[in-house]
Image 1 (tube, rainbow, N blue to C red):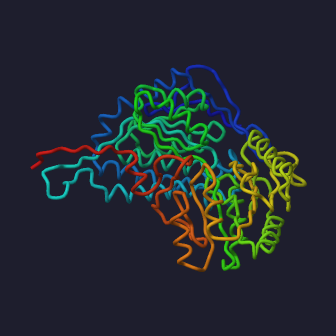
Image 2: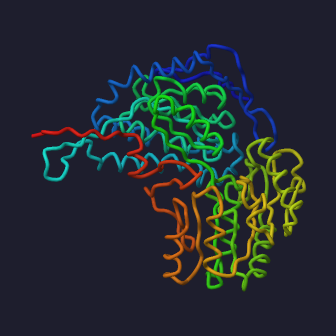
Image 3: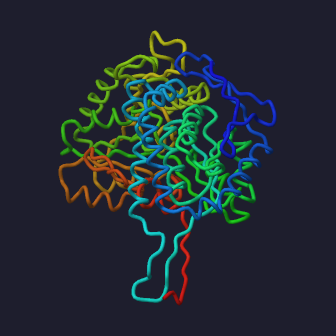
Length: 475
């Protein structure tokens, strides 16, 4: 068991002001893997004060200084990649091979992306042929609040562009999976990040989260998490007009037409189950053209039955547990709601998979004959649960897909490129993936409607952390 009862403030690891310990649980076996401390108002104030004091120095640093820091960080991260993968696997249950292949490398991917953005970004430019100069300045002291499902990915997608833009920051990682962030703080310290630029205080949303989002010396809040929490943060930040970036939930529709490629259904099920269903952009509603509906249900069933579930430390391709008992209980209740509302349970269901009585394991679950008014079709379940819904026409598919408060990522499977393009323009979401093609490096990620405000990644994710100033009469 790791003792992690320290915060990183003003370039050093410090003891919390009060003893308020929290156990970090390994979801594979329900054991305590670490103990952290939850911060108090005093700890939050100290971190914000350190970030505020460092802002004049870091905001006036050169592009070359910031590039050099991030290049050192990149090399350190690559060297400690396996360490990062192991920590993530233990704290949130990602199978170790998946953690090494996807979870941990998401950190270096973000560093590499934002290094490229920083190198080509001009912090000053002339406005057309005028005597107006546009100057891009850091937004200031940022509160960065990150989730547990893709922990280091979300940390890096916030910390790295903030550093690159010249901001200083206080990071509050998820208290459920904080260990990767603490390792990342070690890496930043090793890279020579100046004192006060990056600070870390552990805590929960009601405590440190609320303290940060309402703090008078915070200029910007960047949050990834639930839509409910995003609304609360927006209220907290409104009184003093903090800039707010929100990456929230999703309930993606995967629209499969009769002319889709033969792997479309299997691909869709695996994508839904990826990361044990704990991704906000998961395609959890599979909309299938009625002429191939029964066939699709059978393929989905076979795919689910061939999906293995096991502990995170075991090598191989399988699903791990969900992150916590709270999540496990929520998913179980939603699966039961699907049964109670008379959706057809094709496979899976409530309870744990055979042989996995300890740990927060969910049976890979498929529901058929779902209508879009059912609880399982409207609620972000955040587990390996797929709802299959029939449709007859393109128009009906669009209507069902858009009938949700969310608008993060939708998917279309068809060999008719004109239909694919036509569909993509009418689907209300920040991303539309066609025929299994993922987004390119640097593509902006974010959503419409209740899925958030702003974008992460690439040029758009970088400029989230800068303000533009116009200076006239510039010669």
